[in-house]
Length: 256
Image 1 (cartoon, rainbow, N blue to C red):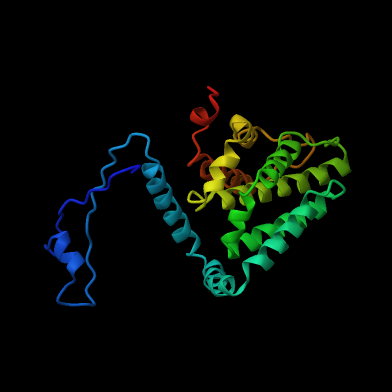
Image 2 (cartoon, rainbow, N blue to C red):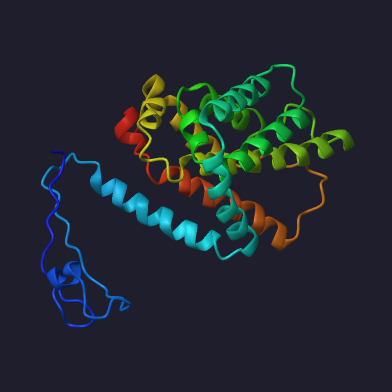
């Protein structure tokens, strides 16, 4: 056993013990609260990390559900997800994967395909399992962030360069959103930890390093408004924290 869970008798808000709560109440429609005391006897048990991640995922999900559009899409996706055959979904994912890994893609092509991946993953949890099945897609997203986020491959002090840099920053935001989505609620996927351990965790280290870099901004580009700047950095920082939360980079890679 990796851990041992113990439940102490604790009173609910109505004064009954947890035993009485589990056995039922006189009023079936009455809701009760209870306190569960959990003890982990194995210092190496992953249970504490999973509990913390579950609570974090719950808070994120509740926050997202405040958006009526998201709640409607989420509720309808549950029904649709049950109707789609796994074989068909896997075939579509592999097709999308091949198109994404095509070296001849333009930045616009990549953006459209990545956006399709993001929308599909929000509706189907099974796509997260397919994403973590091997390292191809994870390494692709990390490499794309390394390629575009710190510095543009073109001269950003030209009119064309400034326009392209805006597109590159939009792409990096989409990439971090997808990364955040793939990490969230995927702790129970066994293949995820194996993918993160690839190359002694070097891709994870590279990911965290690029997410905290200072992106290149053209000298003559008009300064963004305070609200625009806050939206960009809040999105980037939020996704960085979500990504970093369940991953112990030092423990996994040995990097100090």
